Amino acid sequence: RELHQRPAARVQKPLDDRFLTWAAIWLVVAILLLLVKKFLKSNSFAGYMGSL
Image 1 (cartoon, rainbow, N blue to C red):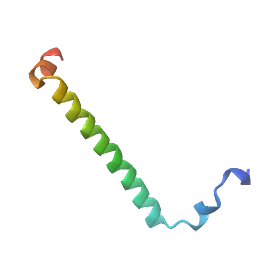
Image 2: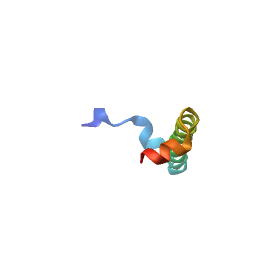
Image 3: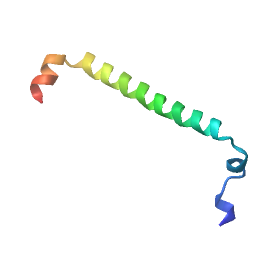
Image 4: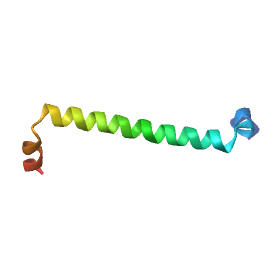
């Protein structure tokens, strides 16, 4: 049971953990924005709205 725990998890500060969480969130948001931008550029926005 002890083998699965990372030794670094104990030493890690909550501030670093929070920073990593926010960094992951912003990374996902940035990727989603890029995908949406690319999708809207390839298709016309009116055609996309009309197909909904």
